[in-house]
Amino acid sequence: MLSRTADHLYWMARYTERAENLARMLDVTQRMSLLHGGQVDEAGWTAALAIAGCEPGYRKTHDKVTPGGVLRYLTFDTENAASIMRCLKAARENAHAVRGTLTSELWETINDTWIRVRESSPAIVEGNGAGEFFEWVKYRSHLSRGVTIGTMLQDEALWFTRLGTYLERGDSTARILDVKFQALLPEGSNAGDEADNAGDYYQWSTLLRSVSAFEIYRKVYRDRITPRRVAELFILRADMPRSLHHCLAEVHDLLDRVANRQSAETGRRAGLLHSTLQYGRIEDIFAGGLHPFLLDFLARAADLSERIANDFLVPKH
Image: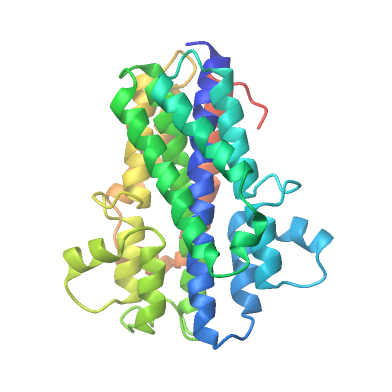
């Protein structure tokens, strides 16, 4: 496959997944802010900006962190390259560039998503419509993935699309766990010491719902929600669709499928990171510190992203 074609497919999938993950993160932030009795939870909204990597850009154009300001900046702000609107636009542009490689159903799905969000009013995220909008973004992402799997030939085009999806998903899961986990623990506590403290049920359940894992948690553990188990589910469960383990298992497998003469080192590093998650224990992760572990994961995921670009794609993003 031509590197430019692979590049467009890979980034089409990453931007679609990124828009969904932004919607998930904003939805959980808004839900948690409601627990403050209508008071502005500046720390929570600042964390949302940090997760998205948008805090410096936001502060250049805004005097203070407010719910409305963050929502507008991360949803419909056309000047913010990381906003949901810009992500969906970028997904559509990449899809258009390889329209002949996609099935007509997939192209129509992605194009229709962009048309609808372009026609939407930014005002919908300033009131009670924010939650409904976030659900819509998630639904359109689910629809895109379903059409991709259900209509595309099982060849390199599909594999590069899936590779973008899982690398982006793993990065997002690590970011939201890192920021939100520390915010939910009692102030001044150590994650390891508080690993068996259930904390506030609603907040932990909301965090689980942010990655569609609340029902999975109940099925796996059948007990009260504890921080240690939440972290274990997010990181080490191979059968949890958005866990770091599951994402890296897929990335490792897909890199084997698309391997070329120069990608051996990239495949080795993906396998090494996957083995860390496959054979890791949550007790050891907490002993070494959850935050350092997640920072290391994000750095290694970023390294994989750069190496994939150099080995297969057009390194410009």
